[in-house]
Length: 390
Ligand SMILES: Cc1cc2nc3c(=O)[nH]c(=O)nc-3n(C[C@H](O)[C@H](O)[C@H](O)COP(=O)(O)OP(=O)(O)OC[C@H]3O[C@@H](n4cnc5c(N)ncnc54)[C@H](O)[C@@H]3O)c2cc1C
Image (tube, rainbow, N blue to C red):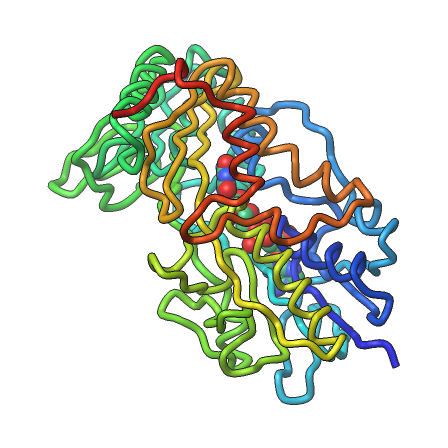
């Protein structure tokens, strides 16, 4: 009897898991479920928002060569007792193993847009000479502000933030980032907290009101209640709590990966990035196929490599990091950084289109020493002349 494996969510990590399982074993029927047929390239949402003409990828085409079945639908309930998933259209899918990979979403704020909202792009086009306020200067806020300022030179772009943009980077990369934002005309206001968004204005703590035509909120992500409602153990943020092999601590037949999982490492809980999420997908695939072969799954280990930030289409900065995501002495800027960031953004799709199985060890960097992939990436892309941050 083939095992039934359902992967919920065909984002970066779910796709990696589905491909990994299908390429490793013939002893499983793998089904991947996603609300849309088109793959959502979250890494490029800021490009989509300013109307860039990007290649679209159909999930059925991406999974077809591996034999994975695609079901279009949104899971509305997980029956963790009887091992089934119910979709919005009433369809039910039974599973022996479930991979929970539904990612995260940006919280909706009244009178403001989120980066994934198609109406944001329309609002920008309709206010190309107006004022855009971007609330939050995390990496998504920075990328959105830079992209909008470059695409719409007549637009006044305000980046509102409590802290300095790029505060997690080393001083040189951070200074470079700030210079590029200045050059693009992005007006950065730090030390401010947005209290609320009003029609046509943003109100700061303290009462100051800033008139805006378009407001974008990029302040953090939230989790769906699907796992919690199913009785799976979740952390305070609603992410599924997993063991070292990425199995739910309450329901070991459920694996959780990517933004939707709370994954502990020696330095803390992994925060949601593609960089960390894709290795979790590869590892879940390896763990499930090991279990199917009667072997114990291995513990997951991950260390960060970089903080890549695009600054419009003509500039970028990449801060290389220690495994715990603190900045190392290396960073890239300008043309080399643009090429690096593009390689980061395009490589998942290239992999899904290829037929090669990447050993999961090659997608990770262990908590201590850098592994071969990290070593090759750094060798290929860095030279001391690119600048040391300290
Ligand atoms: C503008 C932007 C730039 C970024 N840049 C970088 C970067 O340079 N490097 C980096 O490492 N990270 C970056 N990130 C973060 C990265 O995109 C996320 O960490 C990554 O997408 C998480 O992958 P995931 O598979 O967990 O979730 P997702 O990619 O969000 O995929 C989840 C999938 O599940 C589907 N889904 C949701 N609910 C259900 C349901 N109920 N039933 C079925 N399917 C469902 C969704 O539709 C989606 O297709 C960026 C994010 C943004 C927004």
